[in-house]
Length: 125
View 1 (tube, helix red, strand yellow):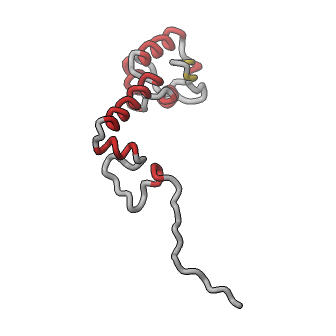
View 2 (view 1 turned 45 degrees about the vertical axis):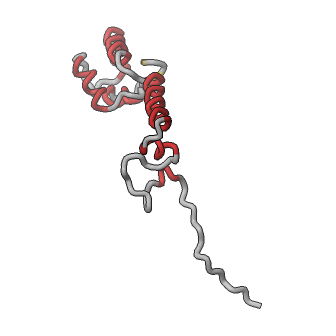
View 3 (view 1 turned 60 degrees about the vertical axis):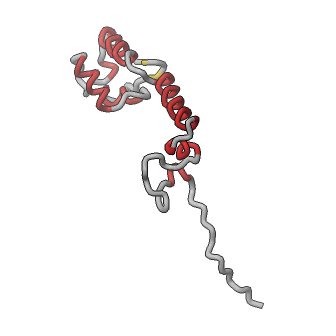
């Protein structure tokens, strides 16, 4: 089953498999399946074509994949352009939501850069 160019894994249950689409999380996947009266524990291979089309139509009514990624990057670019605090944090690749940076924040800051102790061992002569 393909939705917006993304292949939904056949081995996973629908509740989890739909999360392969960017912009669809567990909660939204469960909500979509509940509205369409489809069991979340069902596999994509067991669906009829009508059910597949209903899921596809419902998901494509949301902002997903490329359109959502463009929207998010445009929002971040707007914050940078107006030089807001959050925009500056994004530009400097630092946490933008108030987290501490003295320790942690390794995901954004990258690999730790060790500076050294400043003392060197004396060589024996």
